[in-house]
Image 1 (cartoon, rainbow, N blue to C red):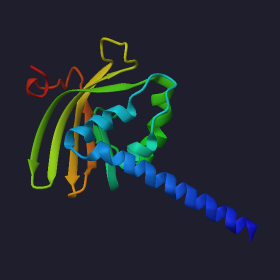
Image 2: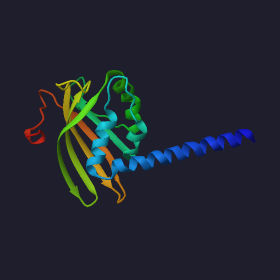
Image 3: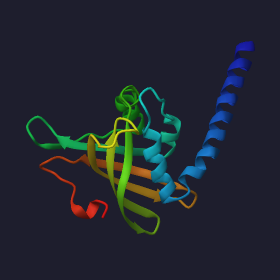
Image 4: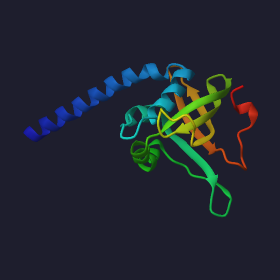
Length: 173
């Protein structure tokens, strides 16, 4: 009986903590701007700095996908489909171990009704102190507003290369 009471207490405590976190996180998804700012902020941090993966997952609709694209060894463009948990499992440790900051430098938004598509040009740095990015690219982000908040439905991205430079219309003036 005692084990059941302790287990029930732990479950209720965890549930209440999750509810408090969700309430605090709601302010971060009230606008398209705040949702995108939170996305970039939550994956960014100095070497050794932990990320708030609970907040990261809170940004996404269930079944959302993160879809990196790039060339394979034969030079053919391929994509991988990751859930938010897959992304955390494959990239989370690397982000903390190496330091990583992704900064949005330009945005093009197309919206209709409750959906938006954002082409978000980014630069990536190993530290906030770095002046030159080690990588640039474009995140294609699809979002849904359900009347209460913004949700990320998918993020599909490609990195810039010499053969694939970012077009001028997706760079700051």
